[in-house]
Length: 315
Image 1 (cartoon, one colour):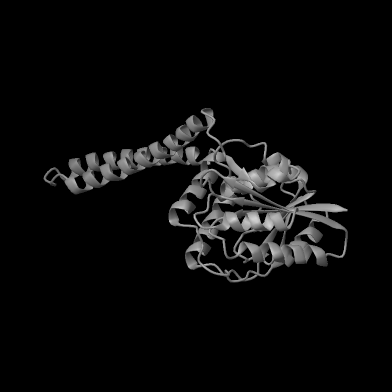
Image 2 (spheres, one colour; image 1 turned 90 degrees about the horizontal axis):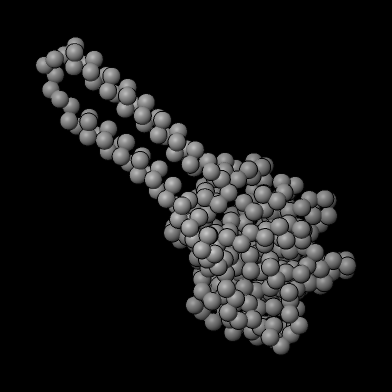
């Protein structure tokens, strides 16, 4: 018998989480083999009434465990909290909006049985907004260039992994987790399976431009020093361009002594080089700032409350 842990970060899902958990239970009951399960719901300090729904679900089913974070730490931190509490042989991550049908979880499990360590669902047709699709595309390019993601693997928030992968991921205690980076730091024995991507039950994605930028910065600075190397390369390029422009200006002045001084060209060069320097300083500052926060042991997440007070603890 295998035990499967379903980990779901919850935010603004008061009206959807009950159906999502119900679909999971139906899928598990329909599984042809012997399977034990648990559902771990992490309330990422959602402003709606999702915690009361989680509490009710937990009272009705002892295999549902709820945890409430003290503030909004973000989706990845909520997932890390859930992984830490998971006790299953297989851990499955999925969203709280119903876009990934729970029945598809069984397909991920069957693919794991072929010997893979991690299996990501690959959406045959994405139902996201154009903005979210753009963010996914940028994230794909970043993952391939910075954290060593295999090019043939599509990374989504719906995936299954074996327990040793989750245990390795939760050893990361810094306050800026980036799940894909942690996965590929542990293993590249990964696969995809094609799944359906449903429309959201209601509402819209909580990913704003600010949150996407934060996500990308986590990937940039947590698992690669390539941005720093890029800054160095840009520095050399700007120096070469500046030197070449200086030589050109001197030669041009010698050939054409009556040529008026090129104030606009000079201003353009100063603005260009100054802008590059500011970008490089910003990248370096981002690394130093995150290093400072990590040294001060800022918490990755803080669990404020749990529905397991009257149950045997999950972990």
